[in-house]
Each structure stands twice: as C-alpha cells, then as structure tokens.
Length: 305
Ligand SMILES: [Zn+2]
Image 1 (cartoon, rainbow, N blue to C red):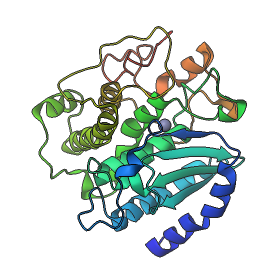
Image 2 (cartoon, rainbow, N blue to C red; image 1 turned 135 degrees about the vertical axis):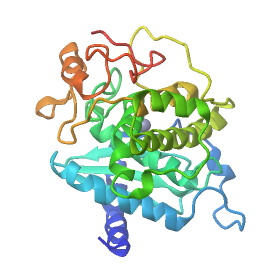
Image 3 (tube, helix red, strand yellow; image 1 turned 180 degrees about the vertical axis):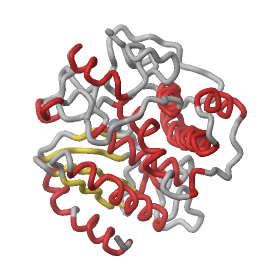
C-alpha cells in the first residue's frame, strides 16, 4: 500500500469517525488535560515528530492491524487529526467500525519520539485487541469492548514490538540503552533481535511516560518502581511510574501472543469474571502460567487466580 493510498484511507475515515464520536464511548491514552494550550503547530522550532513521521506511523499501523482486526469482524479506521492540538489519542467502536483517533498535539510534544508515538497508537489498538481485563463498573454497556488502560499498555509492549520492528532490520536500536534496561531485557531474552526489541520497547515506553509524568508534575525512572498494591483491578489510567512498570514487564514477557484471539472475549462477549481471567491467563505472563517475570504490576492489576 502506498503512503498516499493509506493517507486516503485515513482521511476517508474522518466523516464516519466524527459522526461516531457524538454518541460513542471513547477510551483515551491519558486523562483529559489542557496541554493543548502549549501546542504551536506553526512554530519554526517545532518539537516532537514531523508530520511525515506521524503519517508513516499511522500508515504502518494500517498495514499491520487491518487484517488482524478484520479477522475479528471489525474495520480499522485510524483518523488523522494532525492539525488538532489535543494532547491525547483515543479509541472507540461504533458497530463494526473500530476507530483510533491520533492527534497532532500529542505528536508535537517534546517528550514524544517516533517510537513513543508508535506506542501511543499501539495503546489505542490495545483497547480494541488487548482483552482481559476490560473496563467495568460504571462504564456504559457500549464501552464493554474496551481493554482496561493498564491492559492497553501491556498489549503495546507485549505485542507491538515484534509486529512493528521484526519485519525489517529495524529491531536494532541506535539510541544508548541504560544498563538497567539491558539487565532486565537480557535476563529474559537471549537473541540479539529479541534483546533489541525489548530495549526499543523500553525506550518507547520512557517517551510516553515522560509525557504522562509531565502532565502529573512527576517523573519516571527505569531504576524505580511504583510499589503500591491495589486490592481490586484498577481499570482507569494508572500513575506514570506504574505505567512504565507495566510496559517494562510486558517487554520482558516471553509468553507468545495469538493475534487471532482477544483474550477473555469468547464469542465476542468481554468477560471480566474469573472464567475470563482464566481464559486469558495463557496469552501473557501470569502466575497461573508459572511466570515470575513479565507479570502485570500490582499497582493496577489484582490477580485472583
Ligand atoms: Zn487508553
């Protein structure tokens, strides 16, 4: 698919997405915020990524995820909002339309690298495909398709790297990798390609969580952990360090993922019960699967099995 064709597909989705947003529940990358006030699309010293890089990432996501989502009965529709200063991204479903909205305001943030932007997009795809645990509680019935925030993060780092960088020689990373990241990745992964994918995922996660930390007035570190423990699974946006911990855990998860399955969504019906947890358990690293590395962190996830 040429870029021009992909862009036409993306722009072609705009009408349906706008009409869908009026009545459809959306999952976002980060809490609503006023960082859009800092955006300057016309500034000469623009930060973040370029519009071409932005379009390239979207076109690549269309290529990778269109067939996977079609196999689930959906039609992927990634909508180009380059000119919109919103610092966020979102996912929604309207019937068979599985929509992702990507905003220029987020792409232009100084914290955002190309790989970081890729991870934000993967997070949104993760709401569609990530499965258990799903959003729950006070959310309306039409939101029941969506994986929880922490699960969308876990999907991004567990599933995206091999799909995104493994089809070319791009797994290799040119950016310096902190020793702590190398240590954690190399404990699990033994081939140079697997190690590079883990490094690259970790640095992408740092980019996105640096943005989250900037919003919250905090910071994240590869050398720290969010040691809080929830008594029941939290399905909203975890704190920035908790989200970095989730990404790093997922990058170190060696359990294989099956692209033909949305774990816990048997027969198209999301299941947050123990049965759903059990059905999903062998699609990622869990205690039930006898893993001790790569588990979802307790700062948002409460395992009942
Ligand atoms: Zn989200």
